[in-house]
Length: 419
Image 1 (cartoon, rainbow, N blue to C red):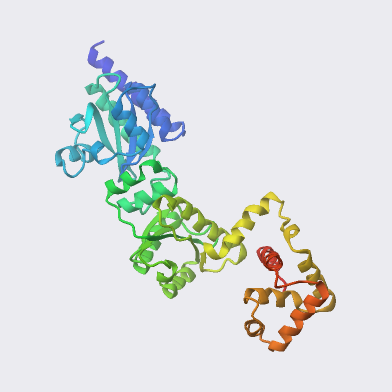
Image 2 (cartoon, rainbow, N blue to C red):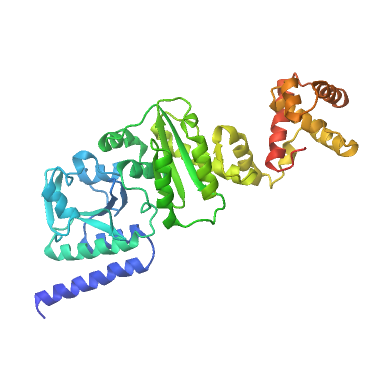
């Protein structure tokens, strides 16, 4: 049998191995490791924002180029030569030309690099670096098959979501998923030429019911949000809209077009969560989780199509975290005095508990409380004095006020608020 026939058989055999690695459904990492073993050289896959999403494991190596690349987790400018400043190299990797062995001043070693296409769109690129075994023409064919298999394997990968078609979107995605090594975040921001202002918040919008909507609809909703909040940076993550709000104003929420946004939420049957304001971009993931928590709390407590501000529902998030730990028995943390008042109301058909609730919410202001209850101020005074007399409660005490306030929040969370 001729050498050419042997090579053809080897290429067919290795191609079959790659497609079998896809059929195993063990993810992109497994496909990359399979290809690296076949080519006996390290391989990595990066998305369009230069973020390395998978790489083969190498025995301890002294190759500085590879070690720095993997440690950073993304291609910095000096490690990313195939950009628009080098059209020939760019076309060789992102164009339709045949795969070839490449050399450039950014890499001390020869390498193969080619685009990866997912559902007809360029997702990123794969690179095989010549560190162990010299690259050959046979390797080019095998690598070409690998890139096709990787594209199929990435169809359901988290990073191949809608809305990540610019450097802001990809960076946001890397941040909220925790994929980015924060040690190199400043270098990443500088390399992508990202600009953020002093005050930032994350706004997340989701359907009111978790099972509602379809992922293919999200691009439509994203377009609408871009019109409603033109200064925001919106991306789609699964079936939610994630908007980065970055501005000079200290009150980020005040800058939102409340009426238009409320109309959108009502029409699309969505609700939203707004994070704390943050100044350090490293806190983006934390802010994203706060916004998601605000939605979770809002969905449980009300479910109304509105924006739930984390700073207003933070205490309920705390109760949410505590709920499962105590088997749902949050009433054990309620003030016994308040439970006595509630029992008294049930027995004598009074409204002392609800009056105390509004009294505390109205900053212990009898006039504001009477307006909320739509009763005379003297009636409020009578009820409060009666509570002090019957239950020996000192509402001047900060400790007692706090105990009652957190107790009311627990009952509100449990949908057991009196009145």
